[in-house]
Length: 196
Image 1 (spheres, one colour):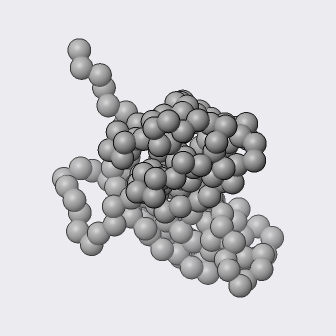
Image 2 (cartoon, helix red, strand yellow):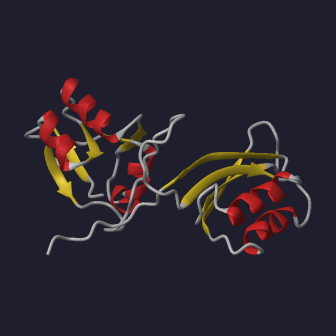
């Protein structure tokens, strides 16, 4: 995703006192943001909403980090383009529903789990996947509010929930995990092949 620093027409970078964007957009542009002096960085609900805020309130001392399309829609001018730290950054969007949205084969599963706070518990949890040759594509931990030193682990598995090895691994994990929830099983994103 290419990020742009967008402001009202006629506003220059030296007039900026605030920059708005979604926390993920701000994180993806961290190096650029460090180059701005005396500018408050403000997290908002979404990147396009940040552009709308700057435009609707006609803020002449503020800018938004958003897409070029958001700038076009809301009549903002780019003060800087391509400000993301990495050219190949991606933002994941998740659609949540009770029914499958298409005939595509699920080859990726996202789960969240917690394990007791004792030595080796995370190793034991991850070993259920290694023993069954289920790849782990991502693992993140987040503290559980109000429970010091306890964490929720979010994991992306390289298998559909109904694949027998994945199903067996999750059944095994459920035997000792404090909590376990499957957030979804879906087709993984594939980079589109360019037309010939």
